Amino acid sequence: MKEVFDFLKSAGTYYLATVEGDQPRVRPFGTVDIFEDKLYIQTGKSKDVSKQLAANPKAEICAFKDGTWLRVSGELVSDDRREAKVHMLDNYPELKGMYSADDDNTQVLYFKNATATFSSFTAPPRTINF
Image (cartoon, rainbow, N blue to C red):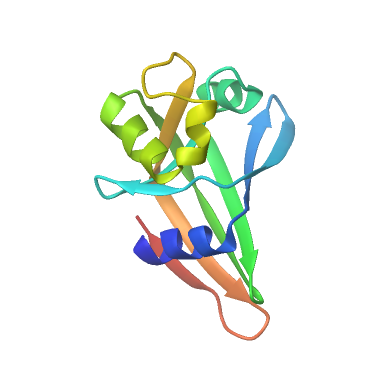
């Protein structure tokens, strides 16, 4: 999982795919954190992505860097604990102007039953489960 985190962090931007009914939705994200041995992302509860994940927690993220791409699929589980929110926001202080660990909007989610696959055109795919 640390390798997945490091790749996402160094890529800077990854794309999160969710579904809304039968329509796929994809948008850029940049937050990633490891807290209590789980891979976390962050959003706002007021956003459509939060509502989509509440209706269907299955999601996939994809990032590309230096000729390699990473796909992580699994379920995203919301963690409402203040400690998890603080940890994320401490690692992304630039978000503290929009989010707070104590507001009703900040949402952190972790991957459950995740499968991460590293792929490229020059090497066979490699999979990590966590």
